[in-house]
Structure formats: C-alpha cells, structure tokens
Length: 243
Image 1: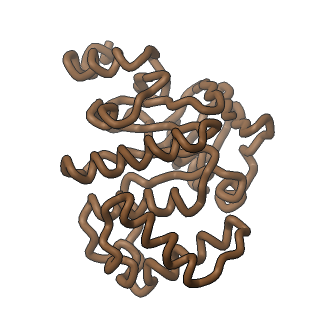
Image 2 (image 1 turned 30 degrees about the vertical axis):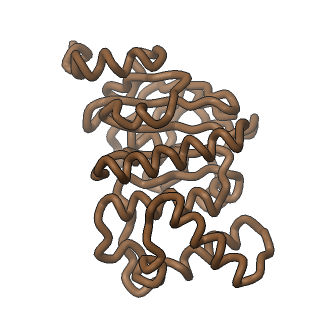
C-alpha cells in the first residue's frame, strides 16, 4: 500500500529524515517509537504532504503511484488520513459544520438527518458528548477531547491509510480505552486498511495489536521487530540507541 523509498526530507535546510525506507502492506499495523526529536512526527507530516516538509531525495508511493508531488488535499482524497499530535484550534468554526465539510470530500450523498445520526453515533463510539458538535473547532477542548474528535474525523473519512501521531498523548485511561477500541474495531471491519501508530510509549498497544514495531532515531529506523520490541523499549528506554 505504502512504500517510502530512500526518503530524505529537510525543513528550513535541516535534514530531519535521512535515507528512510519502509514498506507497509495492506491490512498491516506498524508502530513507530522513538524519543522526541527522532523524526516521527516529521515522517507523518511528510507522508501527509504538509508543504514545509521538502523531499530532496527518494520517493513516496501509495498504491504504486508516486505522491511526492501530490498536494495535501489530494492525498486526503486518495485515502490518507493523519490524526495530528496537536490538533489546530479554529474559533468560530463549529465542529458540526467542519465535519459536514470533510464528509463532502468522500463524495457520498446523505440526508441531513442521516448525517446527524451518523455523527452522533461516531461521537458515542469515542465517548465524546454531542454538545461538542456545537462549539468552535477544538476551542477549549481538553487534550483527550481533541484526540476523540480526531477519531471522529477518521470515521467520517473512512481512510485507506491511517497515521496516528501520538494519539495516546494526554489521554486518561477511559479515553485511551475508547479510542483504542474504536481504532481496533475500524481496522477489523476494514481489513485492507493499513495503520501507522506513532508513540513514545507502549500503552496504546494494550488496545491495538501491531504487526511490526520500529524504533526511529535521528531520522532513521534503527531497529524493527514485533510487539515484543515495545516491551524492551519500556524496560530499557531509548538511551541504548544513543551510541
């Protein structure tokens, strides 16, 4: 589904991803772990196509097509979704109206009452009270409420590739359980969908089961394994890679 081929990325003339390669097959879940500054979020933003992330070498292929020159909006329409580590706050834009706008990207036609029911159901799945639908986008939301809303957006867009950038940060146990369960259910129902989970900690892995775990350090993958690798990181930390 996704191939990152010898990717080198710069931001403000500084290399942040270096000769990075990774293959993600349909229906697989990859976890990328690492310290702050290791390049994890930059990798997510590069795949999504944020303009400040400039690819100076290598390529990105999605379903065998190069997307390196494709806009962020076109990547979204192609089925790539990124849940941001720090979702934007946009006062004055009601959540419900925002969700209607992104639903239009799917090209589906639905009656207003049916859309209301759909969104209400998705909010219930992630444990977000429907009163949040009538507030400004992420305005005065807690960290957990922002992350719940990111998953509502995922459910509306029905993506083919999901990238979750520290979706577990700022979550209490109940929020983590709700979000983790929702992600697990979506992947079970869409078995050709692939997912990249970016995290510092292994606690999200109590709710989703990875096929692969990778350690990222200084813009590269320095080790890969299965779920057992996450336990090693939890016990040993990342200092072992500072050599």
